[in-house]
Image (cartoon, rainbow, N blue to C red; front, side, top):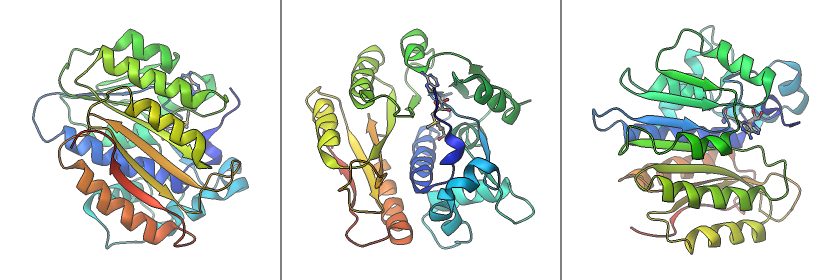
Amino acid sequence: MNYRHAFHAGNFADVHKHITLLALIESLLRKDTPCIVLETHAGAGIYDLLGGEARRTGEWGEGIGRLVGETKAPAVVRAYLQQVRTLNPEGRLRLYPGSPVLTAATLRPQDRLVLCELEPSTHTALREALKGRKGIAIHARDGWEALKALLPPREAKRGLVLIDPPFEATNELTRLADALIATHKRWPQGVLAAWYPIKDRPPLDRFLRMLRTADLPDLLVSELCIHPPTSGIKLNGSGMVIINTPWKLEDTLHEATAWLHDHLAHTKNAPWRVERLTGG
Ligand SMILES: C[S@@+](CC[C@H](N)C(=O)[O-])C[C@H]1O[C@@H](n2cnc3c(N)ncnc32)[C@H](O)[C@@H]1O
């Protein structure tokens, strides 16, 4: 495990993933019934954008750095930007909230957050970032294995799984498709979401075909490219795939992703889409 998310924190892909995540959680919170969010690959929780790793790549300058001052944006984008500002009360952008911190700040007292982070120093940082927060379980365990061990949850009808792996292994897309299909079988009511990198299309088209042919209900993709997806090496775009897409989420994501494309894409030739692949 060499991956360190600190190099990429707050980049355009984090922005797209985190806004999609907040939209998903807001959909779950429409009813008072308790819900659960399980993150299989949680990361450190908080990132220092002025620290060595983030400074070395400067990726956040093309992501949150471009947006933090925006006030006119779709509601879910505004909610996300507000969380970033709350973490930086002095006004200067320095700290960036990872998915566990955004989720913890959005859930209610009756809800449960379960986090898995395998890398020891990242796990320690995550515990520190969420110190004193109630209703949160933080595991130093393999997130892929946790899908089998922890699901279905007691909140059988209301919950979300986020799978956000590092994509270090060459077979990660196949592993992700297999995990989504198996997890849906184990917990058919759960909302499942996963992030994937967009470099060039052929491997992704195979990945999405695997999901489409597996009869997964209400399958939706949200994809934001900032460059045309023509290089197999560079991160050109960010994708989220959702199974059991909540009601009205498609409209929310359509508005938010269009706005993000306007503000983050380097060229109009970089595509974006929010599209249902099954159901609807
Ligand atoms: C892309 S980062 C997570 C970023 C985080 N979800 C966010 O959006 O803020 C992936 C994380 O997964 C961790 N990781 C790698 N393999 C894992 C595994 N098998 N189980 C749990 N965590 C793992 C890495 O240490 C890394 O912190």
